[in-house]
Length: 236
Image (tube, rainbow, N blue to C red; front, side):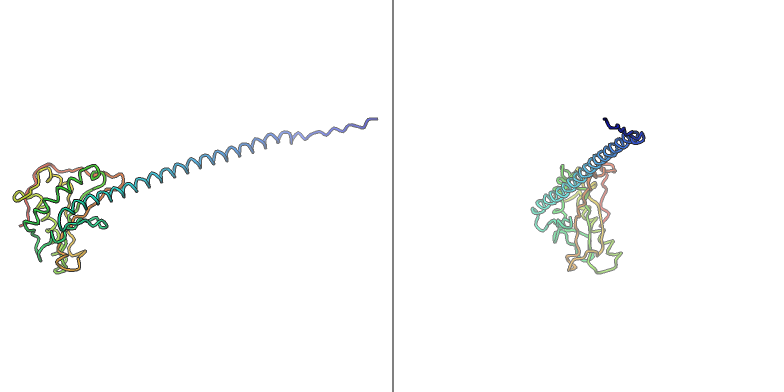
């Protein structure tokens, strides 16, 4: 009456392999999840680093703009002096012009420089200045008349003459020794012959102060000279 029961015997090989394939799939899924987590963390770290760098760069730009504004306000108190914010230059205009082939300043020009420079020093040494300003380069220029080397020497003498005015021991509005120390630390001399000549010869015979700024995470170098012993101006 009863049919014959048919028993299907499972393949032992299939039974053995089935758990293996399940474990392998789980392992691949776990590895994929781990990979995604690692990549997400890495991307977040990179994004954070980029964001922090961009913030520092933006703050650096703002600091430069701010100190240029402060220099501009200081310059406005002196007729003829202005700050070129695009070139990072303090332009003295007619207040620091030189005669043809000359490197001498008038007494009035020297007094003006000694009045203005202490304000520059104060700005350079406050918190913002310490953070952003590296140094100031006094650059002398000549007109196009004469040879390159003779004009290069003349432009250097004009730059040096400005520094000599700062270290003068006779005259009006003399700098204090502390201010002289700051001038020696912060101011550098540069000569440019007739490079960057102006439209007219009179305008070309000038001196400018170029502001150099620190890079991000850069600090102002320490002075390596002994205090005092300023000497006397070698120019006559």
